[in-house]
Length: 254
Ligand SMILES: NC(=O)c1ccc[n+]([C@@H]2O[C@H](COP(=O)([O-])OP(=O)(O)OC[C@H]3O[C@@H](n4cnc5c(N)ncnc54)[C@H](O)[C@@H]3O)[C@@H](O)[C@H]2O)c1
Image (cartoon, rainbow, N blue to C red):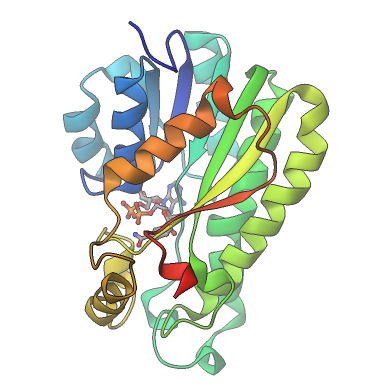
């Protein structure tokens, strides 16, 4: 198949359903010729991902809160597919109670959990992929972040802190994986109604406010985010390293 990702094999982590940003990325990358391999969080998630992915061989369980699960998943990927050209990390989690009200209500446990699943997990998967020699040269890693890393967005709280850590992880990983031909970047996506967002208290207002701050009063779409992901996975972007690219229709400007 023709396209900027012809012959590339890309792992997409974080599809929950057809609204998932990971699914938008997967679709745009497939249109550009990539073969997509998916990981899903657990058995409960498998059903909806399987309906989208269609091929059971390309569907692998991976809970990023567990090193054992990551190692099992990546070993299976290596056995089945050899090496990968890229990895998309579109995973985040914080407790619903901590995505509301004041950050003063954050608990030690909740803070650690949000950091573990939403920020450390990028390091964990990059490390596992590197140790198993899973990534080709050149390869690309892309993660998904949000503007709440820089500004105090209502209710985003502990997740904003986790996204700040995630973006710092992108820079340090980019520095240390560069010599292996792996570049690491983040997409800072505009607010979209996904399963993860419905965990944020007052998410309807957040989505409304975000839409009103775009340059043309139209929210960003999944294909727009996916298109940028396809570019970052392609060899057109080999000079883009350790960066955070906004795909939010200008919300961060206004
Ligand atoms: N929706 C938005 O407005 C928005 C904006 C900017 C960035 N993002 C980021 O995009 C990414 C994808 O989120 P989304 O909005 O598409 O929501 P989503 O709910 O569709 O995706 C979140 C995914 O994280 C996975 N996940 C959570 N804990 C996990 C674990 N322990 N192991 C493996 N997977 C786990 C879930 O299974 C799910 O597939 C997240 O990092 C999110 O913060 C979202």
